[in-house]
Length: 396
Image (cartoon, rainbow, N blue to C red; front, side):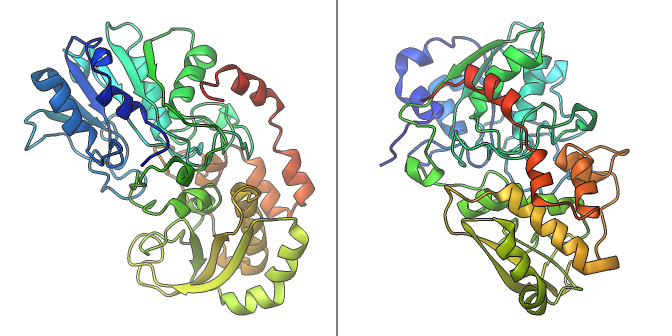
């Protein structure tokens, strides 16, 4: 049995709480929006709210969580079973329109986040909060765990000159918050106009829990995170979306592996990378040379050599630091075969994709200049963030 109850579980089991939402109800959800019995939130909402359940919203990757990659939009439709509209918030708009919100009294958000700044669900949520400021709509966050735990922070703070749909707010790469806590931080520190916000907190979740500690089943929250292992390597491998190297999309282990047709992984590891890794100070991870064949996206149907991150100890593994180190080493040894991806990326047509992923251009310049690990550490100044982070914590 699960050790914790998610916000959805709390709502499903608390009849008194259910009666506090007497109006028309909408739900933003995705594939991983299930209760501890694996019942999807939409089915639970139909039982609880009946005909007052009037609209469904889907984030990036769609309500069905089947759309790949960035800038792959999903369409609006009418759900064939519930016979209510399903609106995509990754379509011609990322912000709910007046028509989408019309007739809604309570808009619930039940999304499993990944605890990483580059993951867009928290921005769909904050855009909803901003869109509902002047409306008589209550926003209710059904809180869920941060799978990477709620204590460890890592990576640089977003430079607001590089804001995008994968980075709207000044937070580090591993931000340590639940999605409910992100909503609270938004309302307290990132906006002057407050929405009507309510958090249905989890029961039993502790900040030091990794996802397996919760006892909850892992369902993919996006198409390329089908394994919980992928969520832990995501903050490091996602950096390669800003290059022309494959980050493993089109394989069975996306965002755990990366590579390129020009890489001969065993020779590169034996001759160069193993020695550099030994000097890097990286812990809790093994880097394994591999060959793989992506079936779609970058380098589709072309054999690639590359590397896999194997997490050995989650308590000391630093995925962002490991990804930046690997980026620097491959830039050095691949020579002209290493190429940065060109815009657009996540609807940004001006900045280099690597810079909006990193939330700064300093990390790209660090890679190009072959900076030291000490210089990388200096970019990770989290003292200012830690004070506001401590201020909004819902859980111990």
